[in-house]
Amino acid sequence: MASRQGGPGDAESPRPGSTERRTASTTAPAGARRRASARSDPLPHGPDSGPSRGRSSTAGKHSSAGRTAEDPPVRDPGLYALTDHFRERLEQPGRYVSTRTVSEAIRRGQLRWNRTDGWRFALVDGGIRFVVVVSDTETNSPVVVTGWTEVADRESALDAPRWDPVDVDTIAVRTALSESASTPIPDRIRPRTVTRPFVVGDHRLETEPGEPFVRCTACGCRFRSKDAITGRGCHGRSGR
Image (cartoon, rainbow, N blue to C red; front, side):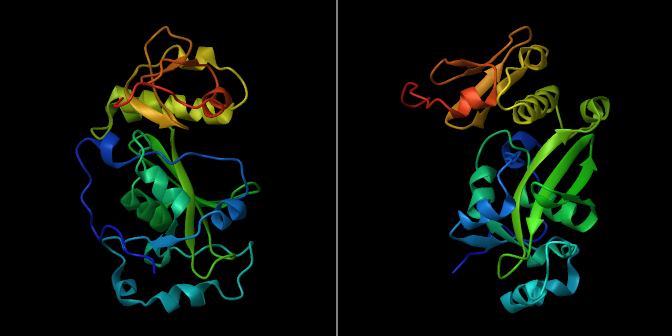
């Protein structure tokens, strides 16, 4: 039986890099990623979810009955479960997505349909766009499939108290790697400074201004594309 994680109104840390982690984007169909997850946990209710706090799991199941892919998803975050795919990425450094930001995106974000992933909620906060992919037609209850962050307005993000320049550059590098997975992107990496390693595949990555690559802090390998990162295992020193 799925266990409930977190709770309503979970406080966000003043260092968002450790609590709000960007969830990796993927081009695989949303349904395929859900089927790969054997278990899902409910999303904690947000601070203003109101009457939905008392709903049982049968309410979520009822909301999916008879729905099609074209039907807009529900905006009650308390009805959503988290797939294992999503939960694993919440534990990785530098992903900048939390259950609280997911709840806010479901409640207040713009809703768009994407042919690859399906329904997406997108919410811009502090110059950063939070994108959350959901579905409720192939499961017994609505699920959060995946999510990630993008730099919507760099100047606004740098001015926002919740982000520092390393956070903003980390998000920019992640986005660049995901958008051009098979293509080396030295010119998009070169201007960035990432001194707090973020995780892609098996590697913990950082970069310095002027470097046309990201470097794994554990094994020392250098990469210019996401496919190169995910195609090579990390054999770094133990304890790193």
